[in-house]
Amino acid sequence: MELDKNIEKLLEKYFEATTTVAEEKTLREYFAQDGVAPHLEQYRPMFNYFSNAKQERYTKQVPLTPRKTIYYRWISVAAVAVLAFGIYFGNDSYQDYQERKQAEYAYQETRKALNLLAENFGKGTEKVAYLQEFEAAKQKIYNKN
Image 1: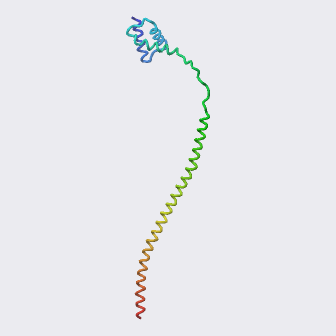
Image 2: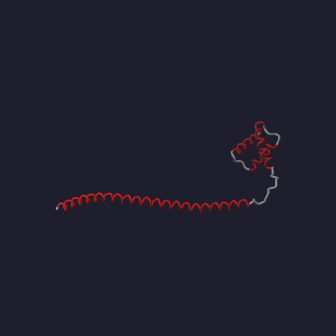
Image 3: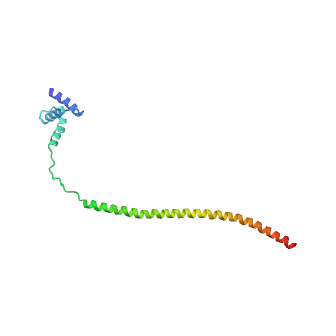
């Protein structure tokens, strides 16, 4: 009975993660024997699993051959080719875009200048109309004399 109380305290410490290695060994040994208290029987499979899992070994041979780097080399060559292709043709299209933008700007500025010229030319033709009336009146005066 005293052993069961001691095991219960060790279980509490175990689940709080405060046990030492020696205390855990005591727990494993207790649950490995046949005389486990009935109310502690539920913990027996867990400790038996830990003991069995500790003895398991991986027996398959691990292949130590290097990866097939040929595919990675070709993929890297293809990536560099695509990148160079994109930079070369992307730069050309960007330059074409810049040239079109500059041409559009020049067209708009020329259009503004010609509209200003046409507006001022319209004002000048109004003044010429007055001048023509003045000429006509002057001619009438001179022709009557």
